[in-house]
Structures are given as C-alpha cells and as structure tokens.
Length: 590
Image (cartoon, rainbow, N blue to C red; front, top):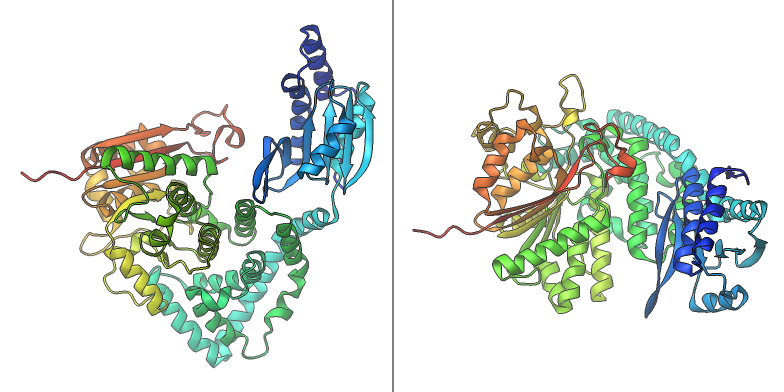
C-alpha cells in the first residue's frame, strides 16, 4: 500500500494553520475562503501520488442536476480516488452529512471538513472523526484519506504496474507464433497475404509485413477490452475492419493456437480494466479512461508507432472551444450552422473520436432532430491506426445511442491514410463497404475540417528508422510535393526541414480539401507563427484565406527552459501549441 509522507512539522501542515490564522485575524470565517487552506494541503499531498485536485467536481445523476462537490482527487486515468466536501465553522457536520448522502454523495473515501473537525467515510462506513485543530490529528486523517484503496483499485494498481512488461511479453510471443505459422500454415499464409495486399492498397503502398503483423497483435490483445468495457459483444462481427482481421485470426487459430488459452495470463489485467470501468457511470469519463489505457498500451508495446503518429489527445476544454468557435464563425461569416444540410464536417485525424463526438453534442444541443441526418450523411472522419479507429467507431456510435436512443452503425469513419487517399485513384479497400465510405467522403463537398493533426518534426533524422513518411508522386500531386511547391518555394529560409512536419502537411492538405469556401480549425504546434522556416507558409496562408484566427497557447519548453511541459503546456508536451482557425470565402467571378 502506498504511504503518504506527511508529518506535523512539514511545510504544507504549517501553511494550513498559518492560512487559517490569517483568516481569523481578518475575521473571515465563511466557507468559500477558509476552505482554500485545506484545498492547498490536499493539492500538496496529491502530488505525491500524481493525483490532481479538481475543484467543483461534478457527479452526474439520472434525471437530476449533477452534484457539485468542493473537490475530488483524480488520478491520471481520470479515476476519482477521493472526495472532499468543505463546511465553515458554523455548520453542524452531523446534520449536514446525512443530507449529502441522501442527495447522492459518494460514500467511498469522502472527507467532510471544517476548520476544526474532519469526518472521514470509507467503504460506506465512518472510520475517523478527528479534531484537526492539533497537527497530529490533521496528519492522521489526511494520511488515512490518501492511503485508502478499495479492493478494485488495489487490484487495478497492481495490474497497471505489470501491464507494460506483460504486453511486451505477449506481443513478442504472438509475433513468434505468427512468423512460425507463416512458414507452415497454408490457410494462414493465404489469409495474411490477402490482408497485407488490402492494407497496402488502403493505408500505405509501402506498408511492411511487420506493420501488418503488429495490427494483428493489437487486435488480439485489445479486442476483449473493447468488447467488454464498451458492452459491445458483437463488435468483431459488426465492424467492417474487425471482420477482415478476424478472418486472418481465424486462419491463425485453425491449427493448434487457442486465443483464449494464450491470453489467459492477462485475465487479471483484463478483469481489472473491466471492473474499474464498471465503476464509472459517466460515459465521457469512461471514454477518457479508455483513451488512457490506449496511450499506456502504446507506450508499453508500440513506442515507435505512438511517436511517429503523435499520439496526444486534445483536452476537452480545447475541443469544446474549437467546436463552439466554428459554430459562431459559420453563423457570422456564412449564415450557416453545424446543423444545416450541406455543411459536411470532416476530422481527417480522428484519433479516438473526441472532435466528432463534441460536434454531435453541439448539433443535438442546437436542434436534436438534425442529428440523425447529419450522422448518416454529413459527418466524416479518417484514422490510419487500428486501435484508435476501433475506439473512435465505438465512441461515436455510443454517443449517437445516447443522443438518439437507438444504435446505428457510423458509416462516416474510414481506416485510411488521409494524406495517401487523395493521391490514389483506384483503391480496393478492406471491403466494398469501406470502399463505399471512402468514395462517399471523396465526393462530399467538405465545408468544415477540424481536429488535432499529428506533429513531431523531431522524427525526421535520416538515421532514425522511425522517421515520418514522405508522400511524393510522379505527377507531383503528393502532399509533400504540394508543400514544396507552395510553402517551401516561397520561403527565404536556408533550412526548411521543419516544413516536413505532419501538422504542416495537414494544414496544406486541408487548405486544398475545402476547395472554394469553408473553415479549418486545427490545434497544432505553434512554431509556424513566427519561426523563419515558415515564412513561405505564412505568405501562402495569407493568400489562401480571408480571415485567420490564431490563439497562441505558448508552452514551448525547449524555447524557455523555465517552463515545465507538465504544468505550462496544455498537452503536457515539450513543443508550443496554438489553436488556429482559417476562414475561406468563395471568390466572386468577374
């Protein structure tokens, strides 16, 4: 069990009493002021466990307003570990606590506190009622508060510690099995060859066999998580990409290999995920939990893939701001709305679906009856990696179920490389259904493009086997060719390597994709705002768009060593970030 390092003589404890003493001198006794002293103590202690205190933490209730608690301590999987409710000195805690429980407050690890007293409930039982005017009493109750672990969480923490190494072990063993079967299992050899061809036609013509082997491994190791946590038992039979992969897996298991037997060593980890996810009632929090699982999965199993594709998920406040801003600009500049027919919306780098989900909520909030048509005909997204594609498909489909009250497959998602798609004229994708989706997207008049493109120029070292892919064609229509002919050609910089960053390609691609008019909203690396290498890009953007809004969020840790990626960057990364909205109007003909 983890221990909290806290003594009566420690600085956070002294700071707590000093703050209360200062409030007392000023005659300040109301809850809104005095609670800040305890809040700062909780924040300080939480850092030892990498927990974040979220003030005014909301807990949803069916058909009722959410409960707003004074705070909750949340871990980096977005799981609430402890709850806090503050009162002032005049409140009678013995009377207030039953009222709170009757209203639906959690009974598992919650502390009710006023300046002189703290009452702690764990597992539904009163475990401590302490006079906290004395430092030792304060330390005792706070330590009990932080060190408590319910059985499910204890199991979860142990499973997480082991997960990284276990995934590597199983991935390595699966790879050995696949390569063994490639030598002697005719059924698997044929199925794998067909699947490899389909992948090369749809994702990347230069895709290696190793990358496709990795896709199979990803599917095998994670399919149960998606099926059980999302409560979607028919997932592998219904998702058009999963169906094709399952054909190869079935060929792999046609001899002596047993999927369930092979994976039973991971049962405890799968069980811990399922049990932990079951404690989360709010589906948005469950999505975030699974996003974190996904991130950790890639860190433990496929670091190179995570790196080249820039796997970083956009904080919800930024997603909401961008969606709201697009709606505002649509109305002001075009007299349109996200709900209007004809306003096709595309996220070309969908990740796990956050932007499309937020757009759906915005549409439902404006006019719920507009969502079914928009969902079926005018929402589009692409993903090039298998796992986020799975997660996005299920997240989006579940959001539609939540909003519309019925399950309907999302036809707007494609497993395809956005940059490659525009350069390839004939594709035989995984199935006719997927081909139909890609063709439909190609034929759609996209009016809004939004999302979070990957950005990681650091992977361009020629000596690094992990460098980003270049998209060039003989007729010079590849996205790298277009960047060279526009942004690079207009630049006076000597070193133009930075223009190979995927986020630069994304802006160039989107500028062409919206054609005559529309809006692009991307959250990206902010290096293009003022660095010399991007002078030609800035000139071209000025020509291409009528209005450009750039919200520089700073956070370039490499530029300013005094900054911390953890505390000064919205993504917790090293490079600076900006939210950029580009507006293009149709040019009037002479």
